[in-house]
Amino acid sequence: MIIVTTEGVPGKKVVEFKGFVRGSMIQSKHIGKDVMAGLKNIVGGEIKDYTEMMDQARQKAIGRMVEHAEQSGANAIVACRMETSFVMGNASEIIAYGTAVRVE
Image (cartoon, rainbow, N blue to C red; front, side, top):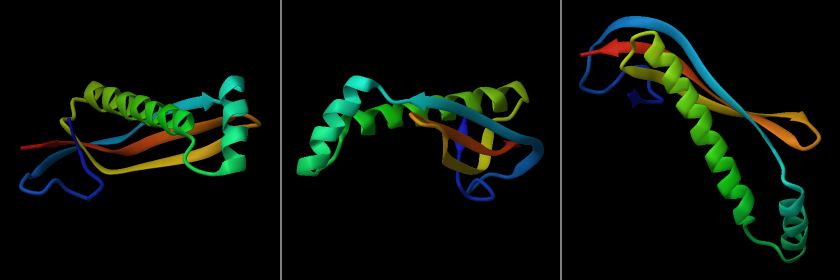
């Protein structure tokens, strides 16, 4: 599956638009990681556990978007975007979305 943020795939011709596709993941915080993050917040720096957790959530959302596109017969996703939104106190939604197309 080709995934691009542009309106088309360089060097390829879009032959069919399949439609909007999306994949999402709601990720909650882990209480143990919150304690460590609180300590890290005091001294500053990257909170690696959260970086890894959010990266895994993004990959899961992208994977679900790809599955959605494959179900429609697409071989590429154009205009791909990602967003994060607050769902509740300790959870965020990561959503990946774009337009599924067939290219040749």
